[in-house]
Image (tube, rainbow over all chains, first blue to last red; front, top):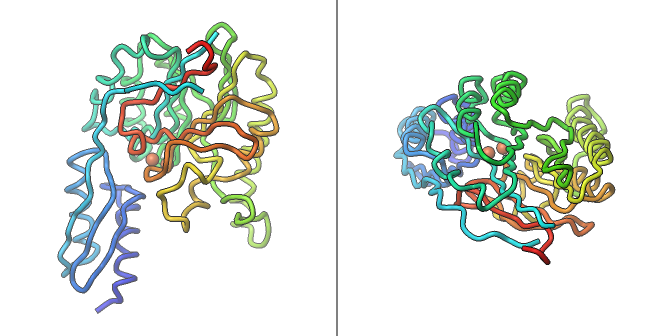
Length: 81
Length: 239
Ligand SMILES: [Fe+2]
Ligand SMILES: [Fe+2]
């Protein structure tokens, strides 16, 4: 089996370079046969695509997708400079 | 007289999100005089995504100024994206400057680039690939100086995608700082003077920072703001 360190690097690279995701800020950690994704994306469908791409890049590992969606609230207060 | 600047970056629109951001722009004219959008407009940098961005910001009652981000370059369609944004009435800065609001506000900038921060940055030395990387940032910074010099306005704001300082990167892993911005950008703006620098790109960063010369820097990446846009009022005496 591959060293977890390199598996994590390969999954992170896949998430950045795969056209379905192209997400650069996702953190990937591997512990034993468990793989964890953390970070933020802008939509629900991207959440599922992250899981797909991670599974394909690391077959045999259990993917735990802990990535959240960015919630966009109303503009709010202005800052005086 | 004061000017209210609305700013956001990293909206990363794709076809699935068509119309979703626009809803947040209703009533912007009551909150701001201008909207600055700091790059990473799209997810993959395709012309189709560029058209969605153009539609999203078309016909707003305030002028909209864009720069592109690294994602908008991914499909080698950046010039086409710039063209559709301009056709839809947007202003796009590409290491250039524009005067707005009857000559009261000047906005200068472009996407910027990386290289790292003073004392811990890449140098124009060694392999051609390394030299080209650093030279790209240096040439951008030089063009920003020229752009800023051309502005003779009451207020000057710089709009970038990459960060000029590391303070607004706090929250990002320090190992990737050289890919998030360059001090050369801050150095150029400090030399020419500006009232505010807006940037994005660092999704896990922090909103507020300052250049070594004391110019306020704001990271307005959508995941940092968690609101549709930030509003900054220049000249606090009147706001
Ligand atoms: Fe981004
Ligand atoms: Fe970016």
